[in-house]
Length: 269
Image (cartoon, rainbow, N blue to C red; front, side, top):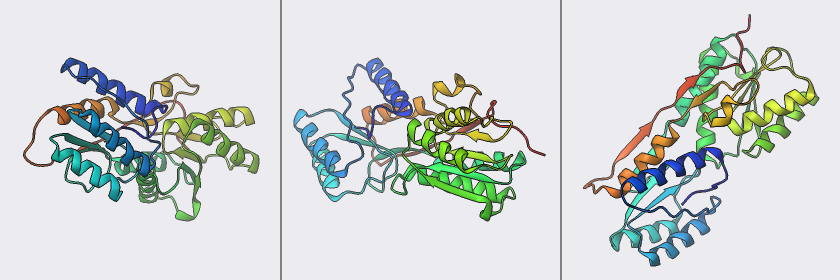
């Protein structure tokens, strides 16, 4: 069960899940809930009637809906196994990405390379993973000497189009040379690259642009995108392993990202 199956990062996670399940002789059925709590609960209710061996729930938002909790508890009493991919206080196996650490490493890199003004493109505060990456950006930038007055946070739809529209408005308003634009995922960053190119803003000569995820397209765009590579395939593989293995106590696993420096950033004097 996932928020949105059309995002490149979730596609990588689900593909890894399917491959791992197939090797284990199991099948994966995927349902999209668009992060709506009532739809998440209803999906679990329907799936209970099908009696699957395990449920894997992924969400960019915090899973704390009361009805969802009741449906999951009922499913577990019926003998099912539950794995949460993301943030949760529920007493089930869970796997998460260190989103704050990913943002902090990128913020520190941008500051270390001489940037002293930055714009952060991110989603709404209800998107827990994006909020944590944003907080990490700010922490890394400030630790590297960037004044908080020189940081700007722009909230927009977390999509290529969202990044394109936000960057187009930035370009139209004028941008000082040497700034950096830090996007909370690669789709936002790739949209921003397209908008800047259309507006005649050169990346990385005029500004630097970064993302997080390291989706396959990050290597194919021009300039190639500096990003934090997240272990998305490992995320999916480990979720299936947790789902198919019995455990006497809830397991918690945190996966870390890795900074990848490419052509969309340059060192500033």
